[in-house]
Length: 105
Length: 266
Image (cartoon, rainbow over all chains, first blue to last red; front, side, top):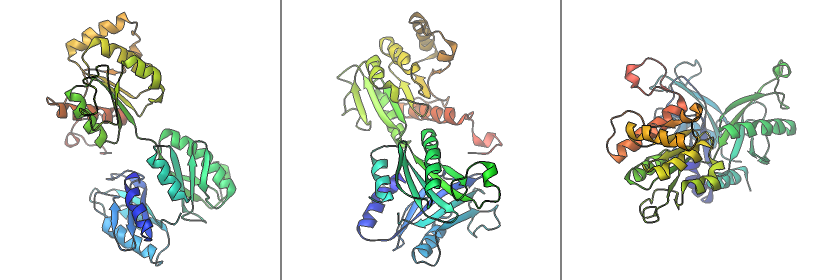
């Protein structure tokens, strides 16, 4: 989060809407720790990361859908071991749970 | 000030702060911001839930823990209370100030170690009693460069060191490293590494005995020779060996190659 603050501030000062995705839980082998975060603005610009690059592009799609109001803030799971999991997996075989929401607080 | 602005301000000022977010339940997305002293702003949608989460977050913040906690809609938290109650899942994220590394001795190894420690997110302090060596110009990567005797620095600021922090003593000079060891052992610092050959360490143990440091549990805290056995030679390699030892001590791992073992890798 710390490393995202500068860009988020800049985006906010430009009046851009921002979605925040944070790792809230991991199971098995996960490349990033709980609390790892990325942010996406309404133009699709991205900062930060939540995995080793495996799921970031899928997260951008989710984040934009939430910013556009097509989806509401929610927990999204990536990985192989969960039936609800997205098609996108992690190469390490672990599972990560992300909470994605508009940064409106 | 919004929750975000207050959060950003505190993170930048290295002040501890915890952010709670409802990730499942009646008010998904609501946030509550807390310091060790109490609530700073926001709400999770119920005053009682706010109160209970704030109480719990103080402990999480103290331990630097981040994770999901489960409550009832009005903050119920005992297993009996949670039966037949819809659960609110709250993600509590702790933002603690960066861990500290104090490096004693302004030598070549110090510059390399300070560099690697910065990469790992440490707040790095370099301390040496010799004014000509302990200069900002020689250690631009350090957060603080202090000209002082170790005892004086520990006396003044030793209480800030805790289990997440590290003290690395690289001086090789008994009149400097004995007091640095004495100072470090009086704190709860998590890692105390002391540079020197096995021979130097044996001699140092004699000097420590002379000043009354004989408690086996104290001596067991000293890691000397410092660092993991990587065959490191240069200052930079040694810095990696030291930092790798700090990580391995924290995680309690044996630090062999993962390819030689079968267990989980994290």
